[in-house]
Length: 152
Image (cartoon, rainbow, N blue to C red; front, top):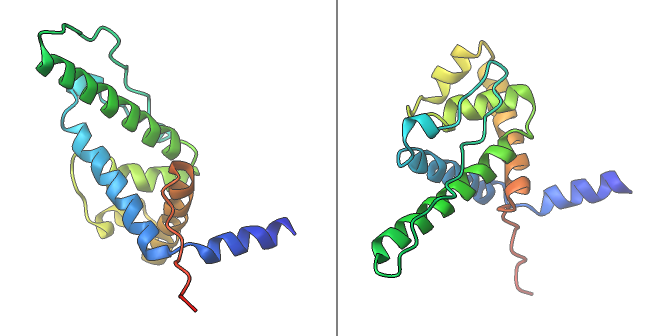
């Protein structure tokens, strides 16, 4: 019965829109990476496990400095978002984690064929593992998109 519910759940997910949501989330991560000083960026270890960047706890909160407050709020939101993405990626398999980190979580923007050639895997395996990783990330981040039922 449990397996049937899982298959039913996946059947209800709109694969294309879910893929778009995951790619948008990873693109937002990449953009946020550009706003973080280099020494605070998560480092990728040999096992493709991301370290969590330090959070800012000494934010300046003067009532006369609204710019400083909005900057601190942005940094807090950015750090929380980046930590959320890192935790979700760390739940993937080693191969899926390597694929996502190399393709979507680096400042460079490599093409798919660059990544699967560098990883020494076939194109079909790359796309199969990427799709699985996208589903896992969508559920971990709670951004999966369900199909709309047609009006009767």
